[in-house]
Length: 274
Length: 274
Image: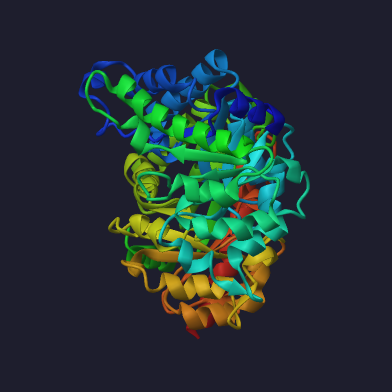
């Protein structure tokens, strides 16, 4: 998928919502546990109930890996279900992979070719040769960790190098990589103050923004500096949407939460048009 | 496994060799491709031929992930084979995971509990709350990326923060985390000059050292400053050992390469005793 297609989807749905599929068997409705593949059944119900309100889904790979081969099967079924039934949706493998050369190519192959995700999150610590193998895939997107929403972000990401925090160095360096058209960035919503500086460095890139809702980020604050000509934001909500209820009606309750977020986004987009 | 048990194994075998199981179907002997699980058959043969010469095996997880569910099955069979037949061996999931809080716990669960690896490699970029969930597992080891052997290491890892390179800040900060007894570090062999500085910060920790052989690091150089009281080094060789030959006799050729490395190590350990 191209970023232009993603932008068109955003305009059509008046939404830049991404729904995080962080499926924890201890949190999903009990009646699903009797099915053969509870994780997939849960995802399928959530996707069917919310696909017209969001533009992206983001399975958090750890939650599938934790269940071993069974978990990978659930992930595989989920991405196939999305690609077959809702091909307009932008899919994100939240895997935060990071390794060099041919190892990076292997990870890219796993997510881009074997599973046919549109994008994957990647960690920058190992530098250029750990990122470029992902960028080599056409119309596939590499979402590089820049500034995350957790407390540990202050350990290294905000440490100053020649008067600039490390996350800005990451943004700047990454712009010199090959095929930067395929680059997006993770920027946590709890760091709304930082968006103005970030947009100076990467005015045109899409930013994947976790942390609205459960982690306390504020949507309007983020949009104030984060929006660009192509909207340029994917706001992720995971728990707030998918765990809206643990009753049989969970999917319609998730829809209600997604509607609230979509409407907030529509309002923001409409105001921007004025 | 405790580090004391690892040390005892090193003394017994007079080796601190780790063999990397980076299995690429395009590089393994052709006759194995006819078997039901070529990756596992290859690993099994290599392990049977070399287990008395090395103290650790390190499957590079990307190489399994790239083959989807089939790859995960091969990985699962490999780790079970190791744990059942050679329980004295230290096993390393080279996964370079890095994510926060409950996501990190999920990854830890996948590698430490579901697959029963002794250790996993972890990326530091997201800081404390992305590392501590791994450290919480007793007698399991978290091998944090500090200074890697690739060219991209200079992008961020050697950038100066208050007069110190980032990788040293990573080492220092990590020492303040909870359960640091379970911490080891990745330090690339191509950076032999750096070992003296690194040992000042982490004198007692085990260092996993990739890059001897294919990536051009020199074993004696690394040992000069890297060895500590408990030996404290795990020197990894992947391609140099496992792809010694692509003929039917590949396993015995791998053994020959492992013997060369083990003997170099024995010599170094003996000289040290004098």
